[in-house]
Image 1 (spheres, rainbow, N blue to C red):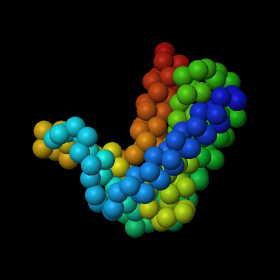
Image 2 (spheres, rainbow, N blue to C red):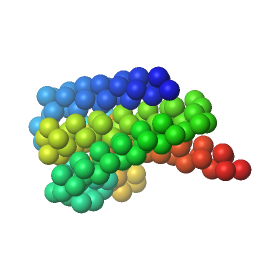
Image 3 (cartoon, helix red, strand yellow):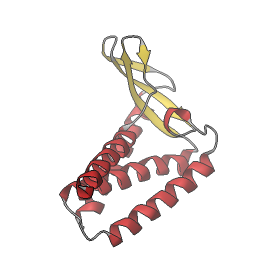
Image 4 (tube, rainbow, N blue to C red):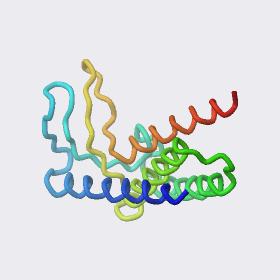
Amino acid sequence: MKKIPVIAGILVVLDQIIKYLVVSKLAFTESVNIINNFFRITYMQNTGGAWSILAGNTIILAVLSIIILIFIIYVISKDKKINNPKIISYGLLIGGIIGNLIDRLRLNYVIDYLDFNFGGYYFPVFNLADIAIVIGGIILILVLIKEGD
């Protein structure tokens, strides 16, 4: 269980460093082409959640993040079957949520920068914290399904 805060802490630090670099090197909405017609680094500010859901509702999203963090910590405290996949999952979820929560509380928006184009479809710009939340959630769902067998 001691590994969960380590994973979360490393993720938060890395997330904040990358966001700092993006903001210090790019103007808002500026892009740097990494892989032509596929991947760019683009500095965006998201006042909402995923796909800008609840845009402009920073306080609601911050409160929801805190409630979810408390719930995850409660689940961890009650989990009798903590294994490595769950440790990784919980660490990724907590680190990702905290990474974006720091932005919301400090800036009133989340810094996004990973910008992909899939054959003309421009996926919404996202960040490392978002990746951690998605991967952590998928791992946890798979583990819970397997435990249910």
